Length: 608
Figure 1 (cartoon, rainbow, N blue to C red):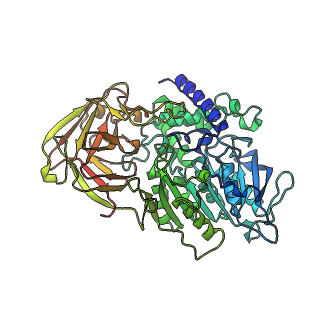
Figure 2: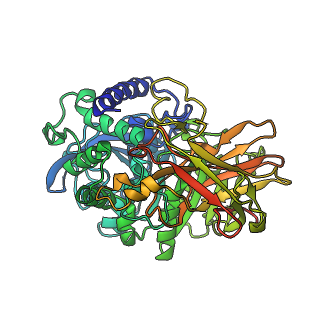
């Protein structure tokens, strides 16, 4: 697909998002209703019973960020009865990508927590709504520094542009307010970016956000593949890019500080160069290094060592943009360095999946949902200083096969370990013992056009149903287990170790352009007794094979899935996927199996 077609699709998506936001379509009811634009913000609509329990004051703040002077557009929610003699802790929040302080998802953060006694400051992120400057992808040195100046306001160190001050926020020390942050996606990563530059923050709740944008937008799931680009996630990336570049159309009369140049209208220049490189389908060493350096600079993976604020991570199981592996990576890093951290895997993410009773404050269920109660407990403990409050277990995950609403979440002190190992037999079976592997050789060949489909990030936004996952015969290989004698609960990221033979790929192995390396896509299906196939959460693991002459290990996206008794587990490697850029040229692949040398699939199993 050409860049011109990307632009047309993106503009259409941008206009669709604007219409849907203006109509206040309920959030997370369609698979991609939160995908682009304001839809990436956290839906925090509080109960309407306390509509007069706070005041709202619009404010402007002139801030310095990234060498630029920017205006932040904000709303201050002040609960009635809160004053200098009766201060309250504060909650700071901002929008998801393409949103603003005024969209129904973001201003609801202010309402929800003001109704529960918190001073709330909600603002439009840089480059969105009526805030100035360029979109800089939650860069800690820009977006984080800007948010830190709002913490100054809450701590009494500065006033708003009109002279308004906040002398009614609880303080730990002069200039140090008791303040937490909450938000989703783009409004999630900015919390970590702010905590990296400002240690005054007392609690974070980042939801459905990223650890490493290089992995999010150009994933390579081969273990140890740092520095080797993966397969470009073109639908998600270009959708966001066009939403950003379309801001002058969606917000007429913009602050001139929000315009960069004709080559890059609304983003910082490095972001546009990254998108242009990805769209080119070419990865020469110099441009690849630039791409990876920028993507990681604006990603928690690079600056988490500076984050010491207690963090409650909430990630979605239904998320083809920022999967569970992102939150897991953040969790492990924070835990290893001693930062207080806990993690919840809820049902919904950027790809939909909202289940009945799940955390959704537009329903007023903060106190009545599992995740909502955990959020309240986190803030009670770290903002209100209620040390007796139990903030819950280290790890919790939603189980869609449990019908009792009081039991849908399972808890654990740690992530499940590998509990089952299966071997890829030469006859297409997944077997339990290496000695049962049948010798055999099987082959697939990619086409010049995509032949497999997993998920369309654009279909929901343009009003079209997504088609079922599919693989075209001859362009993939699969291995299937025997029917299970008892249920198997897979919780976490499966791993597969593979060895493939591809002479054409081997000839381009040492090309100066990484795009010449072999690409394949690994995934897991659930096959029912009647033969119905389900691609688990529509997730795939793109792999740009580091060295086709050697075996390699693939980390699949994390899942929470029960394979019921009588069902079969199917592991697939496919030549392509239409949500990603794939192979350059035709590269036939052969997999040879034998008892002494065969592929292995390892599954993290709950209760093992």
